[in-house]
Amino acid sequence: MSEDGEKDQEKAPKRPSRPVTAAARRERRASTRPAGKAGAAKPDEDNDKTRPAGKAKSEAEKSDSKAKPTPKRDTKTKQASVFKRLSRFIREVWAELRKVIWPTRKQMVTYTAVVLVFVAFMVALVFGLDFAFGKAVGAVFGS
Image 1 (cartoon, helix red, strand yellow):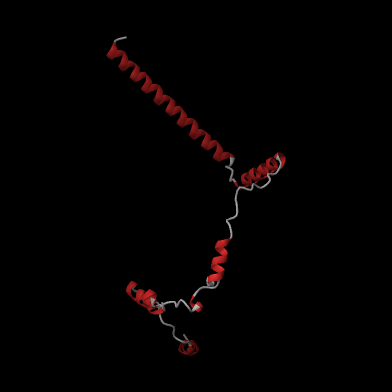
Image 2 (cartoon, one colour):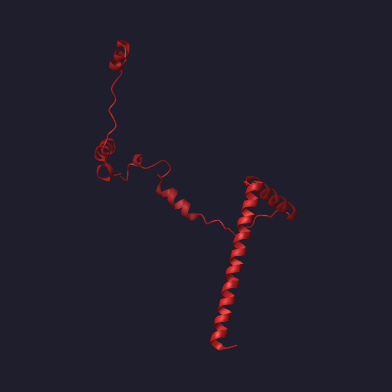
């Protein structure tokens, strides 16, 4: 390199390198974190500054919130007409079908051939087992 490149490197502030070992990383993390539960300040009951926003309520507000009855849930919303529900269903089905990745013709032929070979194998297996068990039962019970 040239002298200019060396001077640029000398001028750049040196950043601390990343810790290489796991123990060094843990030590670095521990030094940057606040001291956990043991070092945390205990909240003072009279001091509302330690509470999160919206959590501080006076005694009057607490008693007012309990005085209100729970709203009822048995009120049903009006359902849309049958035609609107049917059209919504068809639109949702159409949207889902657009998301499907359809196989190509070559893939479809391959999948069909695999299925037909598997079905032929299973038919032959069941036929063979049926024939074998039939012969065994005939030999045992003498038919």
